Each structure stands twice: as C-alpha cells, then as structure tokens.
Length: 236
Length: 236
Image (cartoon, rainbow over all chains, first blue to last red; front, side, top):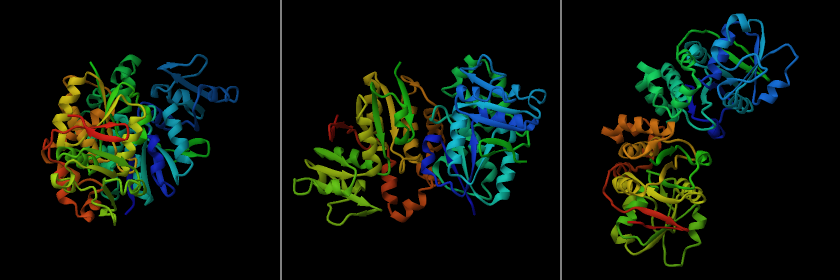
C-alpha cells in the first residue's frame, strides 16, 4: 500500500524521501487556487517565478504577467494572484508568468527530487484525489505555508486530501494525523475555522474576502496542473 | 499583553524572534519528563549533551551518566532516559549527564538567542504555566519533535499550555491555534490519542508503555528546570 505524508512547510521538505513520490503543492490563499482556476479556464501554461524582477524578464515575449505584492497588483503588470483574474476571457490560450513567493519556492524545491509535482486546491480536490488513487505511488502533500512557517489553510487542505485517501494509502506521519483531525473539526465551516488564524487580520486588511470564500469551494474544477521543467501545464 | 507562540520543530526555530522570550522546551517522550522528575527528586543539576561520546567525557568526574539509544541503556552507563530511573534514591544531590538528541539540540539552539530557557512536561505543566503568567514576557513553546519533524505528543503538550494561558497572552501564530485544537480534541484521553501517532508502533516495540503513561500525568511535580550556561538547575 503506498503511503501518504504531510509536510507542514517547505522548511521541512528535506526530511522527506520523495524520489518516488508525487508531491502535491498546496498554497490555498491564493497561488494554487488561482493556478488551478487558470487551467480550468483554458490557460496554455503558467510559469511560476520567485520575484517581480524574474517576472519582468518575460515582458515583451507575449506572455501575461501576474505580479502582486502586499495585496496590490504591481504597477505595469496585467494582474495579481486573485483567482478572479484567471477568467476564460483573460487566460484562454495564454501563457501566464506568475510571481508567488511561497508557492513557487515549494514547487521548485519539490521538483529537484520528486517523481512528479502537481498542484492542489479545494477547487480541484476530488480530481487530484482520484488521480492519486490511480497512480499507486507514494504521496507527499506539501504545504507552502506562510514565509516558511505552518499555516492553517494549507494544513486543512492536506487534511481534506488525507480524508479522501485513507482507504488506499497508509498514513505515515504525525503531521498527517494532525491535519486530518483539524480538517474533521473544521469541515462544516472552513471559513469560520480560518477566522482563528493569525493571518485573519491580514486577510481582512487585504480586502480579499471574496477570494477566500472562492478558494475554499470544493470541486469547481477538474483541471490538474503538473510541473514540467519550468512550466505548469494541464495534466488532465 | 505578551504573546504566546508554538514552534512545531527545532527546524523552524529560526523563524521566531525570541530575544525577549521565555522558551519552554518540550520533549514529552521522554527527555523533558525525566528531567522534570529528576529535579523533583532532588537532583542538583542535569547536563544535557548530544552524543553518547559527549556523555562519556564526563566519566570519572563524579556524575551519574545517563545514555540510551534505541530504547536500551548503553553499556557502561548508569541509566537511560526512562523517568523511572530518576528516583530520589538514585538522583538526590547528584549531577546527571544526560544524552538526548532531540531535547538537547532544541535547548542549545534556543539558548543561543532566548531570554530564558526552561523545561516543560505534563508532570510540571501547572507550575510552568503559573511561572509564565507571572513573568510578563513573550513565550515560545518549542517542540523538540522527532528528528527535526513534527510529532503529536509535544504538540499536544503545547496545546495544553496554550489552554492554560489564553487569558493573559495573545495567541500569535497558526501553530498555536492548531495545537490548542488538537489538545481540546485529545484531552479526555491523551494516551488514546497518541495511539494514532506514527510512532506508536515504535513505542510499543520499545516496551515503554509505563513510561508513556507516566509522562502524560499532569502536575506530579512543581520543579521547573531552567538552563543556566551548560547546566539545567532547578528554578523553583
């Protein structure tokens, strides 16, 4: 039976042996949610980069540039990382270059060693779980966290995935047990649970309540983004 | 209002600003439980060291030497790290040199920057909480974890401390929220909850069920160990 593990932050990734694992990168607010939604709406590819400067180097190459810092679209860029920017009208048949600090870092670190790196969010949770059930590979759920530390929303999502996969996978670490318990406690009101977060004041200040609500909706999408070399493309 | 935070493993300690914080080091199974019990039973000092070799260098200096690896007392040493070794008959007026990988590492790392480093366990939980309430300093609960990764038992204890301190402290990070929720879920049967742990098979194999039960008992002790230079001594 393959195993499933939960890595609570990228700062702990070195502790996991992932050479034969599918790594699911999780950055619920908002990178992996927006990426999922972008592929659902027909994006051709999304290139995740670390910095606004990296993003800038793609200018004049025909890409859409997405850059946000402190909740605001960076001047001169096409849009930020709100999922509502990733509509069909904007992204269909486009390649997007997206700067997202936590999410990009997690993807690149995982890619160095993992069998495969895919992107998960509540928006595509069942599609991701069904895919994982079919692969018969070990799974690592990698929470991008907040500046290398633990956060509630990514861990809740990891728990939601564990809840769907308990039958066919061996739950192999304490973080998975904790994530599952948190999710079971929170599942009837995920938004309410996140109000306990230390980030909740930050989220209110950013005025992204609609984004948060949207990012917690399950199964609006069937797209699964997968990292191939430098680009995310649609796997299914 | 001072803040309280929870650091889930020593690998995340660099993310916390602890210059003005009291750090409570937590290694429930079994280092910080045994250390607490040792001071309760009259030990003069306990010197935590990383390796059996470090421990060996104290031989012939009149100290008791405690070294255990893989659940067995290392040949030639006085005892291991079972709390039942730290009885009054054995430890009163003695200085003990103890090798404990996770706990020692956590203590040394914290000591480099923290205002003060004390030792917590269920055995002295209320004494520790009362002390913290009186200090008006920020608090970091530092889980020693298992080989630098998250574990359930240390996090449960952190949650138990947060539960006692919610009135006078601001809960400042998501890890504290998660720890508190885990504890609230587990508190009526801590031992049962830990059976979900990935380590539970390891614990059974080690044949330390009595140790585990003992290490989960609250308030058997009033001693609070504090790190002063290289030694733990009794604070109160």
